[in-house]
Figure 1 (tube, rainbow, N blue to C red):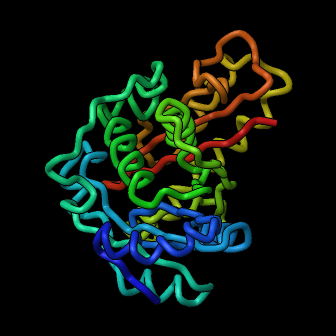
Figure 2 (tube, one colour):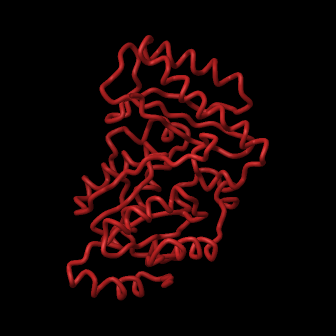
Length: 279
């Protein structure tokens, strides 16, 4: 499998494909790949003539430097996994390749959707996401880009940046993949002990609990009951919000046509996020 570490080498490989008007699917990742990532790549392989998978642990979206240092890095294992499902181009750049000295970037106005939930507890996080995705989009210039809905708010931010930068890219949001227990697949799960993996199930259990209450109670009432339900577990809750899935505004007295519950919590030292569309 071809692994490219520079913009120049990747662009040279993609040039004849683009000249032939071939479609390019792009799956940006931070590595430590799991079945959730592979599902995105498999879908991209069925819908694109060529697929690029980036593996880059982006320093600008981490608020906690210890979290950055501990983030799993396993490039060869990731390449082997990708090799088992199909032929893709792997882009594994250095920080200097993604953020060159002449990089002209100004913070993007995200219409407030970067200030709630993740944005409230991780200030500057989404500007880091916008910066890296914008640069990767400029490097790869894909026709399609694939993202997992586990990072629900991130998908909303990337939709907005694609619109504001006028990128001619079709975004495809793919459903969250879960382990048989219900735990959302995440690279961070590698840092959980067996007992912590069991403790972490309170997240999905709370999401399902909320779903059972939606028909009979208001969002405010459901949130109060859900926080009480969650507190019976061992995790430390950072936030639990029921929001309109389009605007990300918190819901209170009434449900919207598209309601989503989002959770962030600490399982030991590991921060986990999850969400569920309430239907």
